[in-house]
Structure formats: structure tokens, C-alpha cells
Length: 363
Ligand code: PLP
Ligand code: COI
Image (tube, rainbow, N blue to C red; front, side, top):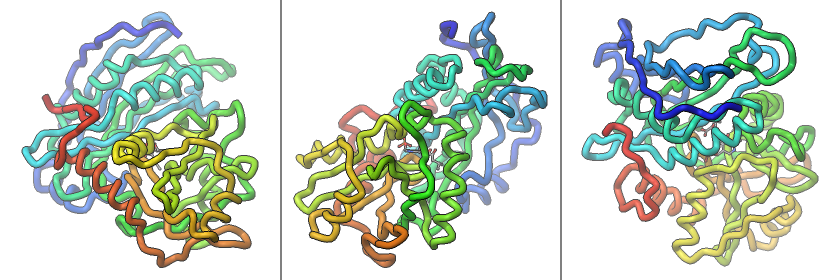
């Protein structure tokens, strides 16, 4: 792919339909997840000849796509997810946005899309916050979820990498991802379906992985569960939209190492915080059998899911076809909740940020 000219400069077109303060505040008071969107969005175009150009902040609204746009046929699409947090002094921050920018680049390489520089990626977030900063809520555990994404817009039905691409950022005020708030969730073990295979797209944040998870996710709901856990040849991979971590009695944290899972930034950060406290962390293949035996013997005592949307969510129960680990009414694990508190305290600026993870978006 051609290299990127940066830094880009952004034009601004204010939205004539920007919501009045009262309407915005009513939405922020009960945001849910992914249901409401701010008044503006970012768009940047890319062509093979011209590279990245026409960076703009424009009114939020429908995209106009030709029905032959290749994303609609071959799913050449990638995205990111990160949050903007309001600190007590009113300032607005995001958590390791450079890591999201770097991951978008890795996803782009896998999906034969052009790479946007990390600098332009972070700038695109700042540009949106500049106009829509008032949409960052301030109630506890709320944030503005930022959703950058890139799609193949070339009008062409041949199967090859598109020569015309669009990058966009939209933003959505967010409360808890799970309807029950931070209460422990139930996980269904999918044995009929895999999420990804060796050499596939599992490590890329691309829409097709999520499309493939919808049917097993529907099975999870039928089983009374909130999320689905995928295996690969009997080894743990991840959930439909978050990573998994197990905690041993001696305080060791275990998490799958696999080429076909998404390298979560939340997981990386929480494991770092655990290591800072002196916990041992093992990133290695973990079989379902190891979890079952460890849970039965009392050696594995906690499990949690982690991701931007889920933050850190305790797992109460893993439900398989013919076995269960944990119980539906299990309490949240102690280490799980204490790591959750430390991570969110850093994100919301309530404690020091020892690793320099926070980037200010509104200045
Ligand atoms: N795995 C999948 C499939 C995800 O969708 C996510 C969420 O983005 C994660 C893991 C966790 O990644 P992160 O912590 O960077 O949000
Ligand atoms: C995120 O946490 O950002 C994700 O992409 C997960 C999705 C289930 C909302």
C-alpha cells in the first residue's frame, strides 16, 4: 500500500442538526451501549493514486455508498474501539490510543487496506472531541465510546484489494456493555463453531469475525448466557468480543497465547498492573481440560472477561453441553474486582498513571 502523507489537516463543517443541551443531557443520563451517536463524525478518503486526503469533520449522517462498493460484497473492513473518559476537572482523556492506532495498522495489513499513521489516527479522535466533547458523560462508569473504522468504497466487483477506501470515526455515549452492569456474567462454551482458524483473520479487528460469532452468540442467549467462549482444538481462545483471563489460587494469572485471537489492549494493561503488584502472569496455550481440572481441584479460583466495552467483567459460570464451571450466582472474584478498580481509577484520572497510558484528547 502507498505510504501516508501526514499530518493531515482537517476541515470542519458544523452540523445544522446538532442536538440542544437538554436533549443531549437526556441521552447522557441513560446512554446504554451503542444506541446514540454524537452530532459529528470524521471522514478521510484514500485512493491508490492520492493516498490519504480530504480529512474532514462533518455532520453525523448516512454514508452514500454505491451498491457495488466492494465492502458490501467482500467485507473488506476493519475497526477499532476505545473510550474517551471525563476526569473530575472536566478534561477528556483516552487510554492508550496509540495502541489502537497500531492495531488498526496491523488489521489493515491483514485485510489489504491502507495504513493510516498512528499520528493521524490519534488526531482524528482529537478532532472529533474538539466539536463533540460535550458528549463525553461524567457519571461514574460512563464514557464516550469511539469507533474508528475503515471500509473499501471502490465501485468494483472483482475480488482484489480496493483502490478507494474511506476511514471514519463515530462516537457513542456509553454506560455498561452488559445490561446487568458489573455483575458476573455467564458464558456459553461453543463446541459447534470456531471463531477463527490458523492463518485466518482472528487477530484482525474485522467485521467478518463478529458476523461469524453471531450464530454461536445466539446459542449462548438460548442457553441463558451473556457471551460465548470459543476454543481451538480444545484450547481457550477468547469470547465473541473480549479476551479471557483465569486466576489461580496462588495469584498467578493465565491467559491464552494464540495467533488467532485479538490482542486486547485492556488485557495487556491489566496483566501489566498485575505484574506491577508482583503477580506471576502466564501467556500460553490453556486447554479447557486445564480449566476444568483446576476449577475442580480449587487451583483456579477466578475468571474474567476483558475488553474496552466490557472493561473487566467477572465470569460467574462457564456452561458447556455436559458440564459447568462455577455457578450462575457466583460472586465476583476479589482480584478481578481489585484490578478492575485500579484500571478504571487510572482511566478516570482518580489515581496516578504510572505507565503514561493516558492521552489528553481535548487539548
Ligand atoms: N477480543 C475481541 C474479539 C474483541 O472484540 C475485543 C474488543 O475490542 C477484545 C478482545 C478486547 O480488546 P481491547 O481490550 O483492545 O478492547
Ligand atoms: C470493544 O470492546 O471495543 C469491542 O469491539 C467489542 C464489541 C463487542 C463492542
